[in-house]
Image (cartoon, rainbow, N blue to C red):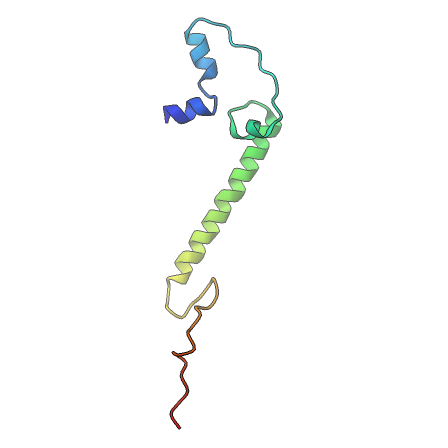
Length: 93
């Protein structure tokens, strides 16, 4: 957990202050990496929150669909299970 917090830059300010140094002034970074780091830019935070909400709701809907699929062997939410042609053999003449 500490390694993750350090990697996203969440520990830069507290560690700098604990060492008795003055942290450098923050400058806005508008590169792709800014969207995966700790930031106080309200536009970046808004996009992080929006994408996080979309991904979480998508995973939740997939979980509900998976549980609905397991309700019965004949109820298929994600499509029918393909059957092989040999299992649907013709009746003897």
